[in-house]
Image 1 (cartoon, rainbow, N blue to C red):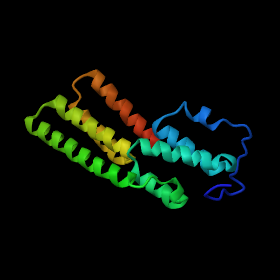
Image 2: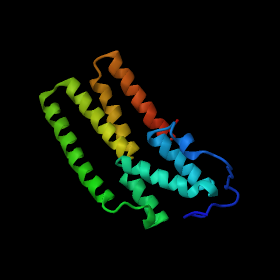
Image 3: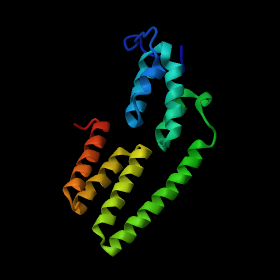
Image 4: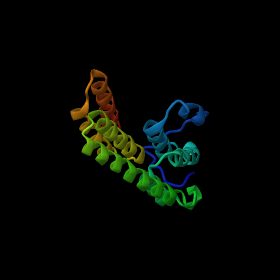
Length: 167
């Protein structure tokens, strides 16, 4: 039925289910999580769900999850060179963001420091490192200079907490 066996007690039949029509309503981590659940529970949709999942992962920068799934699924789901190229670009981006943050810290510009932490939080969120993302979003608190900044920080922390299942 698919690349990974589904235990009979977890298998769900979904005749006539329009996976593409369903999943188009979601994005980001939610889309990825839903595709994983469908692939792990629905034998009839498993191959399609894994194909959509791997395609969705290649749109982002979460090479860790991509590599983990690839090890389980096999080379038919791979796009050769994608992981190495994405990791290379991510290292460059991280170095640039950290350099900008350090520069802003030395100039003591609160708004620029807050934005630097936000940028790093977004970067790690895109990489799938939610704990690191949370750390940077929480650090913005000391540099919030308006109610809007505080609200933005709270929304980002809540979003990451939900994705971490940390209620």
